[in-house]
Length: 592
Ligand SMILES: Cc1cc2nc3c(=O)[nH]c(=O)nc-3n(C[C@H](O)[C@H](O)[C@H](O)COP(=O)(O)OP(=O)(O)OC[C@H]3O[C@@H](n4cnc5c(N)ncnc54)[C@H](O)[C@@H]3O)c2cc1C
Ligand SMILES: Cc1ncc(C[n+]2csc(CCOP(=O)(O)OP(=O)(O)O)c2C)c(N)n1
Ligand SMILES: [Mg+2]
Image 1: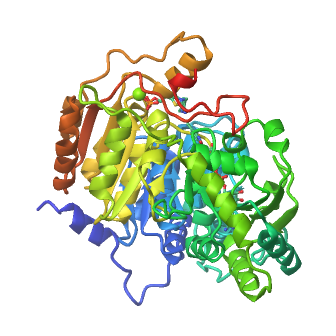
Image 2: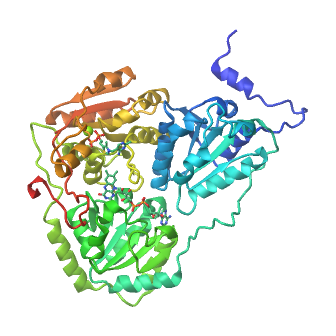
Image 3: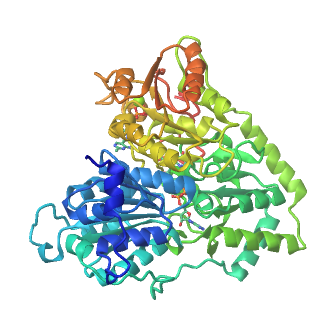
């Protein structure tokens, strides 16, 4: 009689007879036990020769759900998306050689945005390393510049401690991806299992508490400010300090902005929020940045997309306080006056306590004049756009999506391009970890795997991927994974038939020479979605946008691909062009 897959699995995992001598686990079983000890529930991966013992060990357990992706890049992105949405360490598994090289883009993406991950890579047997063995590559060498740390485990007796270290490094301090490279013989050899409770690393001791004296100086400066500004970034999300940030801003009544990576850490619906700042930030957010006299930077790294031309930024006198857990982020691009190295949650708590105890209070008159100026800047209504009944405006799609989903349990992922900026500008995030995108590396292709990773962990939530017809094709094969693992996501493709962000730069900076930015011969996305077993909907008229979005939401258990034909000529405004200062914005094509 044929056995079912479940029966085979049960037989394979059957415990040895109680009287038989205890069997030492092999490296692969040790890996699984370590992942279990770390409470890992999901693992995204792709098998191959070097990891077959590991896959065998996965077969014999049932606490970790492994998701077989269709390309290793997507395994890393899915685990990364899961980590961004949950705050847990994301875990992925790939084989040696091409498995690793396919994973590189995903690892670099997580590294640039400081995402906690552990990536297990298979390696050729230790004796074959360096001999140009089949599917060998120097994983530690290739990934060194794009990981927080990496390890090559040469002895199975070191495996458990190495994994403990990997998880510890990934999630503490400034988070980041850690690669653990496991040669095939190490995954096969046996040794007694012991998972350490804690690990000590002499050279790795991230600081959590900020320096009390520095915090005191910061409090004095903040309370004496006439034109204060609170500039916050991804560090607030990563450090789970959104509640503390809200408390601080409410206590002081100062204006607040978020970077692209910090959206949701402070509620977009709060009147003290000036919108995102930077290259595609609001007029008021950027003007406030340029004209403030005291700037409190919290978990933000003065990225070039935020400060624009550094010379222009430095041309204005302002005092800067910078809270960051990574000392190397401080005074890296902009010289700061009061550095505070520490965890944003701890430091903000201390800062709030000291402000409450201080005698001084914010200068009410100065603050009211400052808000008066900010409200003048606001009157420019820099995000307004001309809606149309003829052609679908991408901004209107995002606004409608926000209206329909704002009171639901919703996650929004995006890819990279114009659609990403419209999503950031027009979807108003009130909570952290709801906006999931690639900021630092700007990786096209992340949107669908991010959505798929999140949906697995948050099965009751609606997960939307706002994408473009260019980006979605970079990991479109994952539609197949969505079907197999029942992770129904909603793809909102703003299809402008252009690599729109490239086209926009070519229009503005390259004399309208649209060199290879037009996408011809696009697939029929509706049929493509159907071929993968999903629902596809073509949306060509503005009046069809809302019904299509409603239909997608209604089809709770289906992956729905909305191919929305948007205005191909639309640009993202405001824009700080390359080389310009952040207050030298173009607000629209009439500024040309
Ligand atoms: C097409 C495109 C356009 C873009 N346009 C814009 C734009 O207009 N505006 C914009 O803002 N960005 C934009 N970006 C994103 C930009 O490239 C950067 O990714 C982003 O600005 C960096 O955000 P951040 O400063 O918050 O840093 P993050 O990369 O989020 O870094 C977080 C910082 O916080 C620190 N940190 C981490 N954890 C903690 C903790 N627990 N405690 C204290 N500190 C901590 C880290 O050390 C780091 O310095 C764009 C990206 C793309 C792809
Ligand atoms: C992997 C990768 N390759 C190239 C780029 C450069 N790039 C940034 S945006 C963009 C166009 C994106 O086109 P699409 O997905 O259609 O989005 P749109 O800008 O049209 O909304 C390109 C090519 C990138 N960010 N990532
Ligand atoms: Mg496009």
